[in-house]
Amino acid sequence: MSRLPLPTRKLPAEVRLGRSGVHGYGMFARDFIPQGARIIEYFGERITKAESRRREAGQLALRAAGGEGCFYIFALNQRHDLDGSMAWNSARRINHSCAPSCESLNLRGRIWIAALRDLTAGEELTFDYGFDYADWPKHPCRCGAEGCVGFIVTAGQRWRVRKEIKKDAGRRTKSGGGRSPP
Ligand SMILES: C[S@@+](CC[C@H](N)C(=O)[O-])C[C@H]1O[C@@H](n2cnc3c(N)ncnc32)[C@H](O)[C@@H]1O
Ligand SMILES: [Zn+2]
Image (cartoon, rainbow, N blue to C red; front, side, top):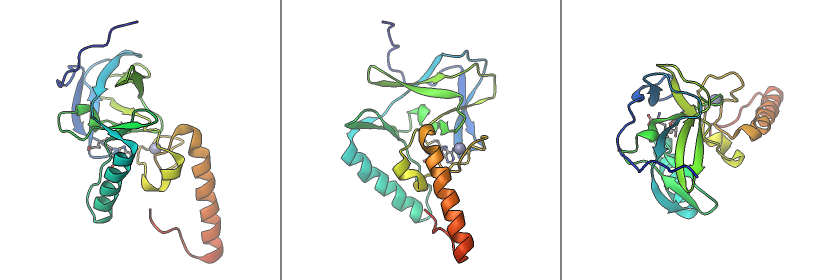
């Protein structure tokens, strides 16, 4: 079993933070990063799912009031999540993409972001947030990837979102109305 590095708050040398075309800030490769490299750990406060729902509701309320309402909560296991909103958790800046350059790995209860393929200098690090289908209208996606359904939802469920959107468009054509915004 390979040993994991000790937790560190330092930004790894091979990445930098910067403005992203996807959303707000993002994380970018400074240099070549080989496929499979474990790049950065996603730190967070360990909270129950109930607390997670409470915090999510707070963020949604902020958003409804015109604020940013970013989500930094990461699903850890069946009972717990990680709230990574602390400023020193640089990995919180990694955006979602429907065609991600990285993946998240749960290695003995610690979350790592690892390269899915070779990354060249300047490329944005992204991973699939894997959000549940039930939450799809809450999280619009602007990743711009081919095959993006316009909402952040786990890859295996995107077909259901596509179906919903199609159904909705059909209803709209018939009635002249539209879906109310999420
Ligand atoms: C973990 S943060 C990512 C970093 C964020 N860009 C920032 O500046 O702090 C997650 C939030 O970023 C935004 N985000 C991430 N990926 C996105 C995407 N593909 N499309 C639209 N918004 C995205 C959403 O507001 C989401 O709640
Ligand atoms: Zn997308």
